[in-house]
Image 1 (tube, rainbow, N blue to C red):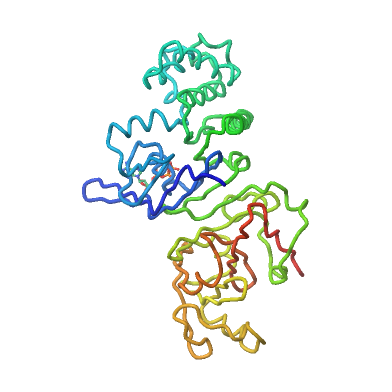
Image 2 (cartoon, protein in one colour):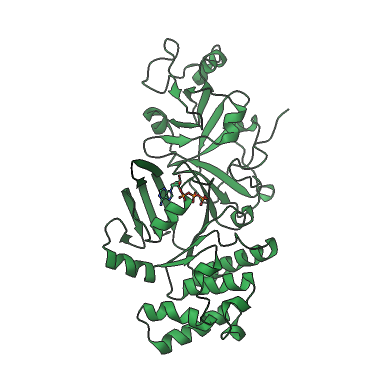
Length: 394
Ligand SMILES: Nc1ncnc2c1ncn2[C@@H]1O[C@H](COP(=O)(O)OP(=O)(O)OP(=O)(O)O)[C@@H](O)[C@H]1O
């Protein structure tokens, strides 16, 4: 059974500057399991750095709960917070200048955080040499950072972050200043320490190359987790596909909707919180114009969102359970009442309670776009049990 290393529950962060208030996190939920390597993506201003700073113990949430490796970060005093930062967290920044002290040698840079953590000089030196071996720079121990390439400096930065054997490594745009070849090298290095040392890694990035290499990518929109993209262990064209009949008639997205990774290798789902709040991906909204309101229909194995007024026309005259659907919001019969939910400009909506209870969504859903409506399907429980991309029928 996987252990949860990070649990964020309804995190809120409000920055106040004089009269001005900015809500940077608006009820963010996130679980990260021990040993995972995940990336966090999102537009500028969506709240990525705010989240990373809270995870790293550099800032505190305004409300909500956050637990990392058993530490309740909302309750730590300043002293405990400082030892949490030293012992539980390793931090890699984008700018190598922020990671390494320029006047010290590489070896001294590796020893310093250990000494600050109360480790003896002898043990710190031994660990520094182990780390130098790990990053393949044992012969560079006496050099200063300026004499290393950008990629080498970032490897040292990762080693410094690992010096006190943290449970969680946080990296903020660690490849932002590197060329594409060096970026690949650094991502491979993160992957190798994740596998060799079992350290959990969270990388904030704008770089799609990073997102292709991690186990999961979480997209943040407007201070909330909106989508999750999981790397398929077996690409879809090698799977024995099980295609639910009802899915086979719908047009698949060419690529995952949010971060643009191919569906053949990545599976993308949206998050649904406990009270049914979710945000539809932009490409689903572009294909089906909901114009502010949607009818929610409960099909036996999925939920449909139709533009207001359209669902009823399509369903009229259909046989069996499709025609006998009841409206989802307050349960009045569909033949006599038309109920709609509000959908805002960026696709946020709240599913009615009976729609949430209708299927075991467990916080996530696949989004499928048909010609005139959007479908939400529950995610199979088994880790590698995917719904493959539906076949297009002309
Ligand atoms: N110290 C602060 N004081 C006031 N507002 C802040 C502060 N830090 C961040 N914000 C605001 O909070 C929101 C989220 O910012 P954050 O830096 O977390 O976003 P981000 O996704 O990391 O953006 P970027 O990709 O540009 O780094 C933004 O509107 C930002 O202006």
